Structure formats: C-alpha cells, structure tokens
Image (cartoon, rainbow, N blue to C red; front, side, top):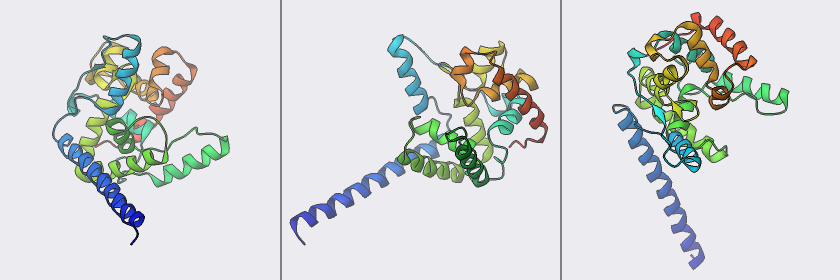
Length: 231
C-alpha cells in the first residue's frame, strides 16, 4: 500500500468514527430528553441569536406545561393541520411525502413539505432551518431515534412545548398567553385551530394576524378536528 493509500485509509476510518460518535451523542440526548424536559433547542438558540443581533438583552418567551395541561382542542387541531396519521406511522408518512412531491411539481416550486410531527421535532431539537441533503439525512436518522426511544405521547408533549409560534415565541403555553391572554389549557376549538394554522409560518402570522389565508386555514382545520386522533 502506498503512503497516500495508507493516509486515505486512516482518514476514512477517522471520518467514520467521527460520524458514529456524533450519532451516539445525538442518541444520548434523545434518551435523556425522553425523561427530562428540554430547556432549549437548536432552533431556539438560532432564533435567540438573531434577536440579540438587534437587541442584545432579548429573551425568548417560553413556558413548559405538562401534556395534561394543554387543551385537547389544540392537540386535535395540530394533528389535523400537521400530521393526520401521527399515531399510526413510525416517523414518516410516505403517502404524504408523495402527495407533497406531486404538489410541488405541479406548482413548480416547494409549496408543501410532507414532514411529520416527529420529523419537525427532530429538526427543531437538533438542526438548523437551512435546507440540504445532509440535513435531511440527519433529520431522518434523528426521527428514527425519537420514534424508537419515545412513545407518541412524549413526542407530542415535547413538540407542543418547543415549536415556534411567533417572533421569539415557543410552545403552546407562551402562544396561548401571547395571542389570547389565557393558558394553553383554556383554548377553545377556534382559537386552537387558528394557532395550528400559524405553525408553518408563525413569525409572519405574528405580524399579520388578520391575514385572509389564516382565516381560511382555520376553517379547514376546524372541519378536520373531530376526526383527529391524539395520543
């Protein structure tokens, strides 16, 4: 073996070892957060950094609440809006992904993602919003880890507490108080449907609360909520 081949071999082994170590590090956090509530996420850290570029003392608005203290209307609304098959799939909704691809091809641009709640949670906990093949691959690996290590109730509880709902605003409790001046447990059906409709573009809807598109989405989600199955 030539000297170059020798170094290539060891370089490849080092790369593989680094990738494996990173995956084990991720798995360690997944196992830990299966029992301990996350205080922050990668997505929160990114948003806080952006806010502090303009206002150095900026803080995020967030407050963890247990699963039982979140309105069942909001749970149904989120399932209806984001992932109707959440309780049945194992992290990926292949039919939903296919429909999203067909819709994007028809429109000629990305208008639908097809990501499940678990995939969104994987991205929020560990990854950046930047799109790349590496990020999608890592998202898939983390999704499998979460689905294997947590039950659906835990996945949904963490999701509802860490997703973005406005500018510097995270989680159901902070969202309910920000938009309706009440707790997440007190949200009614229409309020819940409206909050669910904001999830794909929360900072825009925080600034444009009377956007016509949001009212339309709210009505659609309300109609779907009775059929939503929650963990």
